[in-house]
Length: 264
Image 1 (cartoon, rainbow, N blue to C red):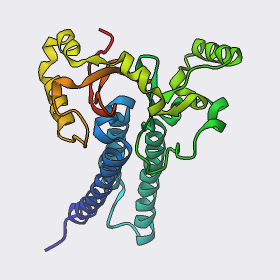
Image 2: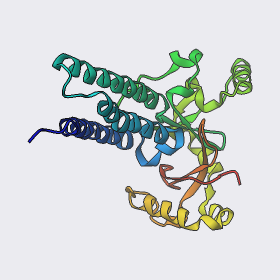
Image 3: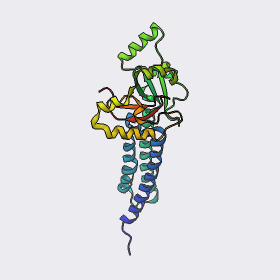
Image 4: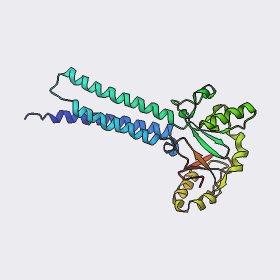
């Protein structure tokens, strides 16, 4: 019985799809467990970039194979076609991973009365030399919580004013970063009781309750165990102003992220 032209082609496409899906799964583990933990992929655009990569690698790659692969072509030509598709996929994957690395949150910096998500894309060229060694987009380091130190001279005040007029905020200036513990008095002074957030967003009560539950599920020693005892502060990023963090009143550790407008 003659073999249909589509039969070997479908086998190759199915194999290509399975391999692409396997690597997409590995990428998902990297993205959501290492680079964007605890839902932070929604803070900086990682979610959209991830699905763009999946679309190109898992969908477009096998589709190109379906269009180009022909079992009746000479072997070298078939291998050339597959190599071309692979190169396109690898190029898209490399570009996508680079983009993800640039926007992944590397630091949460407390500035004045809020926290700011900081990624490599938020750092201006003039401040690159001030970056600490752990601030590397391709590293496996987790997000660090820091504070922005007060300005200590007129020169620093002028530099900060000029940068602010250009849209560069205090949390984006690595030369102002300091140990989070040093910002403890300011954090406590500006943190607000959870009841205020619930009163401002009564329609989001279930969302807030879910965040409280997530916060209490990972309670460390010497931390608040009553959800209503948690505090909150606004969280901003280059993409959004409508997030808040729930923080522990004792350790000041960030315990949960909530997609709510903290300036309402």
